[in-house]
Length: 62
Image (tube, rainbow, N blue to C red):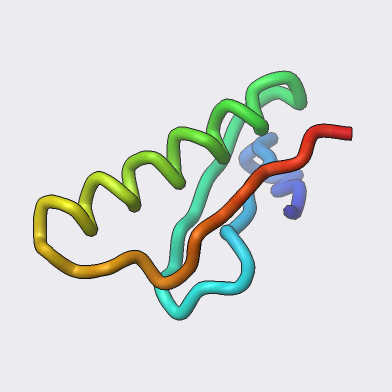
């Protein structure tokens, strides 16, 4: 995850996949939600297109 100072946003990509799954938020409290939404959207897209997801994920909160 990185901070874009010019745009004042946090952004990242889900690691460990061959597909690019980006997420971003404009405040720290929203980044976890953005991550979950990105993964959910990715899995939904895979289901709609009949393509298997690259990997299964489990997010562990501290």
